[in-house]
Image (cartoon, rainbow, N blue to C red; front, top):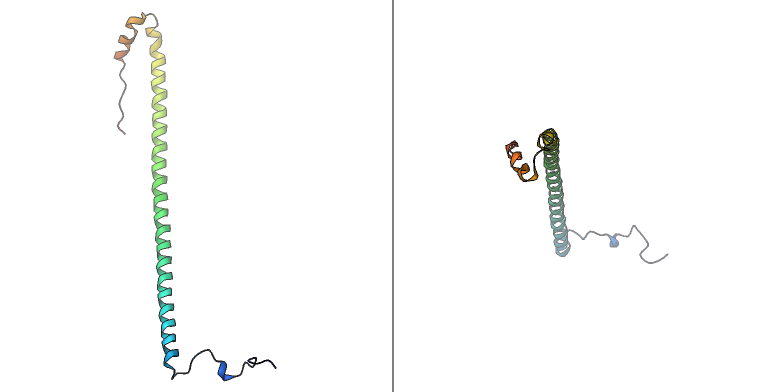
Length: 116
């Protein structure tokens, strides 16, 4: 039989005897290191959760902003169509005018201003 292959040999135990101060000190250090590691892992998970929450809030805010911008684009597109129609309706009235006076007669068209 090979040397050290006997699993029942008490001289090969991993934990030191209770009277051994060096072993006790090592155990305390292991426990302290595990506790520090546990706390660090917990903090890391909390940071990850906070980061995910922040990204979720930012995503919701961007979705709302995007919806508002799409609504504004729709409003402006409708306004552009309305103004284009008004201009098309007005152009036949101005076709007989000479080029020198043409710009002066368009000053009477009022364009409504919409606040943003």
